[in-house]
Length: 159
Image (cartoon, rainbow, N blue to C red; front, side):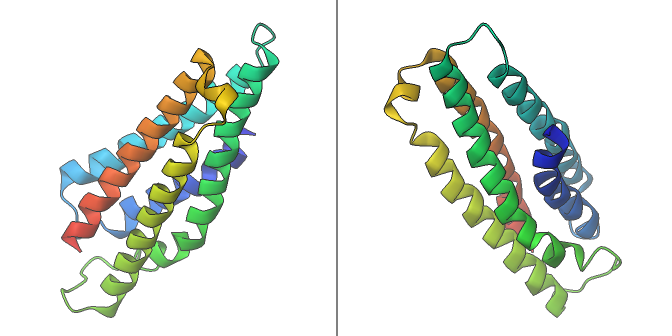
């Protein structure tokens, strides 16, 4: 289940890493690489937490709410994966290359999706806002979304 949930986001991140190799600095590439385990660990933790027998039904529902938002985000991001990956075979993309504009568009749209999904995750149902566990897991998800948004914004500024 974790792999099914994580692949669209991971695909986007891998595609970004691969496709922009001629544009990004080694430091930026490292930041993108670091997102893969960050997202995979988050999803694994959320799924495991939601299945723990020692948490309340409210806590489990709150964690599942966060998982659902991340799944929705992953599905929306996957639609832009192809646009980002079209450049993966190119190593020398010039400033005026139309492919660069397509990749820039995909990165911009991905950033919009992340921003929109961040709002959904932050607007927890009332019972989750009062649940320390549900709130903590939502905060973890927000950190990953914020980190990903920051890296994509950095990439966008270089395109």
